Length: 354
Length: 129
Image (cartoon, each protein chain N blue to C red):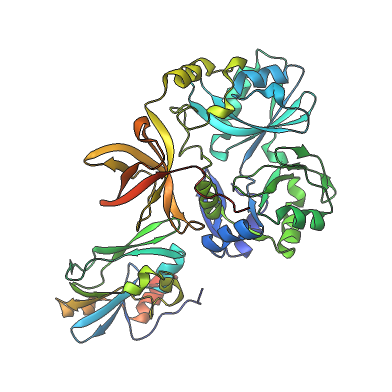
């Protein structure tokens, strides 16, 4: 599948890779340049591969409260909230943002690889509620514009006012109705724009001209990893619960959502493993799947690893035995047979200098 | 990054490595195509001096932000020098793949292997396919 911006990526000389069935740009000029453009100025990512699901009806709130881990009742109109979508065992089917667009109308943004699974799950569980679940992925192109200057450049270029962090507004962009969401996946300020696919190309070109740097999935991954945002499929999956992933803060078991009992149990009893961030001390770049070692014993495994451009070292996230999850714990990462000393570090690995 | 270049005086291996042969020694590196496919090199993990390397086998790794790539030996021999400057500036592999971005120097154990390597025209043809 291709997003409405595919030709733009090719014209800009992007390296295109398959991602969950989508032909997506992994980089244009280079991951490091794109990464630092977002940290220092403003970058934009075509994330049109992400899915959108609309939930509408008098029972929309009750339904979402049942399927999402966070307290959806706290979401007023115009507000965004992060949640996990969990199975009965508390495993994470997907992690997502829900935006309240109107009184009984919500939009849920899914990960591309999970869109069909989420749709099926939401559809199935909505039957007991007076709510309609609609796949609206085709209605939107999605552009994440991120970085310390993202808002000012966007507001000046598009002539619109953007919503504050974790809020959503309904501006006209390219003379078409759009959604502007104060969310992102980079640890920088910025917004995600949900655009009419018909205007995606002219808006992209306008922002390009305004000096916003096109960025690929490569930089998206290094940026999110430095601020320790989990990626479903790496840090999260249907066999891991939010407690061990460090996402207990977005689980409000009192709401009685699907999986809440298992999650409440995990919260009280603790989990065998915990998701940690770590930094390599010295040389070496950790990669997904590398064993985490202490002496001769494997005590965990790397879920995401990379060269971290802002930190200028190898870093990543890993599940390790809970007793070793404390910040400062010394471990070794087995990088293709070479032991690389590493230290459990506090999250986020990269903190914005204020 | 520089434009695609493939010097005439080098011998090429189909795994996108080059060798500059001088007597019984050769300098080895990766080609413009290899560094371009890999992206910005952030780490070169060299073999130790004295290590024996085998033609067509991996003797080192280069890593970009996102990926690891084995470096294949175009010729057999013993490592006599590694490019230590790449520890501090691995980006030389991208910026100057045939000059400052060289990887290792080897004393050749079977100099006749050079005849199996590709000339620049043959290598370009391989890339075109």
